[in-house]
Length: 233
Image 1 (cartoon, rainbow, N blue to C red):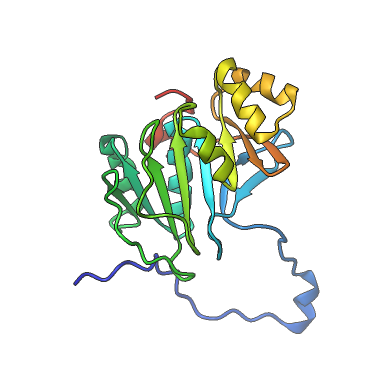
Image 2: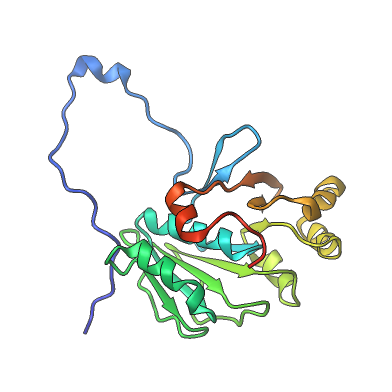
């Protein structure tokens, strides 16, 4: 029986030492670690902590490009990424590039994601790219297993997902979609009016009362693999 992967092994190196007199020169960053989703208007990096000891559900109403950037960056943090999708052809090249010979990103048909054995030593991110009406999946969020659901636009299941998700990202939508989204998320009138005007790669991330306008800026390798930022596929 093939054993489930437990994440990528880290770099092995001998220990480092530092003279006691140099300790004062050290500084440690304080804040969340995780996946860099982009930068705000002040060019500060915004980080999404996907690896948690509690359940964590993320909803992205937006484009495939942004979902794939998030999946690729999650794999880069050492997580195993399982993509549940009805369009495997759109993910095949990404899965091959992400793994570099290691199965850190796997593709599964809708409703066919197996148990993944998430653990603190091997976190998992499930990306659900299942169209406008994603069915309730067998694999749900759990400790060390986050679920990111992609909706291309507002659909009949969107209100439930908007209410149930701990984090919601909204990209450019029509004025008719912006209204219901704004009411459910408690957005201001200005925020609702801005949603239909968003540029490619810009997302409004919402968690409770917290709001962040974020532009996802691809690296050169990401652009070579996925192309330029785009809302529509």
